[in-house]
Image 1 (cartoon, rainbow, N blue to C red):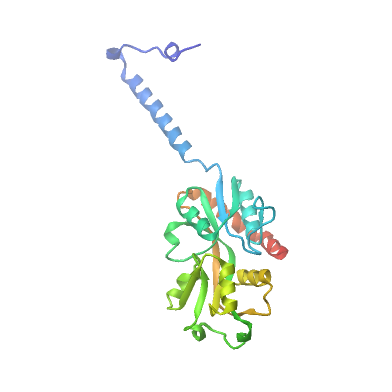
Image 2 (tube, rainbow, N blue to C red):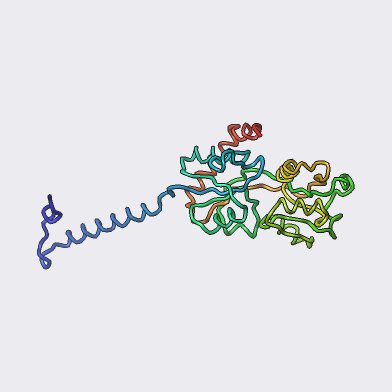
Length: 261
């Protein structure tokens, strides 16, 4: 085997010319540059977290495959970007915290707020949402705006951005980790109202077979939803996702996905 010393014939220390020292310095600098560039490579796989929410993100085979109106756009964006990834459905609070604290992790669908902005890098909007108030069906048509429920108790899922919105306006918010329990509390009168996204409201009402008991009373806000990524994800990766998301919207793919749901 040929040794390094057989190829490069070193001169005694006191007799090495200045040009040799310069060559060695350039060689070392080149090696350092290569190592630095290698450390800035695209992550091997991005974990994308989300919650089960019809028709936005749904598991069809025990969590192995995630589809939905927003999930399908994420799939297409990542495919066009050439990025390795996987989507996992979990509790919203866990989905949010993983993206906030774990490198190479993103979460959808996240409403952009000034408070959340510094903790993520944002790709989107990937969807639009409408916030609604759900209440007893006999109140339908009678209660049509927020100022009418100022004295009522409003159930909101823990970790939902609607919390911030209502609490900042001094509404009486009651949090829960279980959306089904909140709905049951509404039915039995322990809560006066629920505040949630319109897709979530429709899904809960359909799942509980309670259309004769509760109804969406009114809309109170419209928001844009994003894919929010851990800030350690490189800007080049974020730019690539953003570029391909724009192409999906421009070429009609996003509209076709929406039509499927």
